[in-house]
Image (cartoon, rainbow, N blue to C red):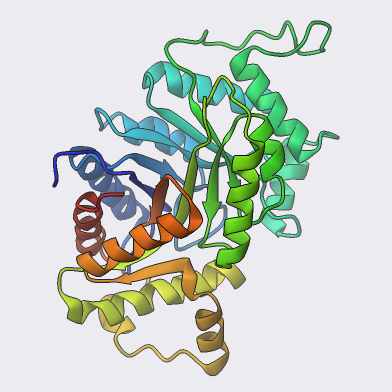
Length: 339
């Protein structure tokens, strides 16, 4: 560790390794967040995905509340929290509760789940139906937290409990395209751009440039803040890289196209000779920018180049390497990279 906090954070999906249980997965993440805290990584977020057998991050607020109790200084948060799955008041209430529990180190990445997905449609329909647009839901959540509804607004006198203690949380919009980034910028949100979702670097450049050009200071940020999220495959032993990369590729394909068909991560042994077909190989080539791969030195160089090209401030890494030992090792490698 270099003794300084790096501008790299972790997005934890709570992955399930081969022949392990949900309890094993949670135990692994408990150890990893503690280690990330010790290594002075910047942030540790928990994703929101439902009915997905290979990952257990279905309740990010619950996960954040529990796992943050094992840390002392790292910023913790939900990444994301889908605004179409609950009311904006509930969303703000949960964020405020976390902020009261973990003073001045809570984040929230707000997003919208994909329509047409059966589970997301169930959540949206059964738990909260609203005529508000996505932009209006973002505005409402922010206004509850900042107590900034104008006089006469129906929610102006709706008290958010607990009362604010300390700094405001850092609010980000989750984006995989240039859509909605200008609106989020005008609200003073940070931007977390998912390169693992859309690996088109030109689209990422455009989204980030649009965000920076339209940013207006808010209760959450006084200046623009951009995170780029992606996969990183790294190891001290270069011979492990092909198998680790294959395991991540296997999961990333499932995540994009049929995430409920996969029940666990590939093991390193299984990944060593896993046969992708021609269609899968073509898809992986088309999405090559969703990840960086290499030795610690190579990964550092790639991230530094990507930071310069995209004009981002931080990276957030999806730690989907197979086996706890390699996920832990990745934290060490990332902690040594100066961004």
